[in-house]
Image (cartoon, rainbow, N blue to C red; front, side, top):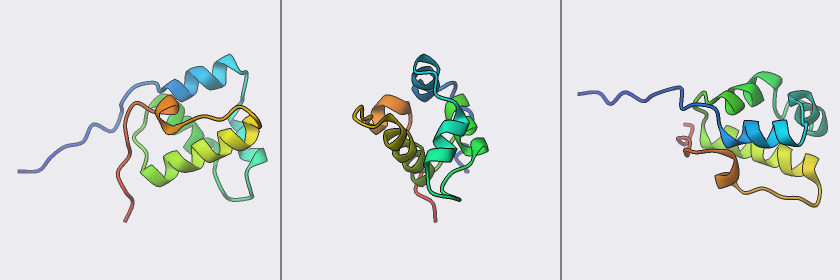
Length: 86
């Protein structure tokens, strides 16, 4: 029997934080090193498309770089923990 994983988990707290702080996807892409993260990856994270742990960490890192003194923890951005990528 195979275990099916729901790929859409609903809008994430990341979206509310970014909306409240008026942070655009492009803000995170432009602050991160080239090739670190894409607009599409951030959008998937905001809208609840299931991501790997590695991609969740990249989004968290980019948001913390952008936010400066204000730092966030993983639990503040996501309601689920992504699987490890192979």
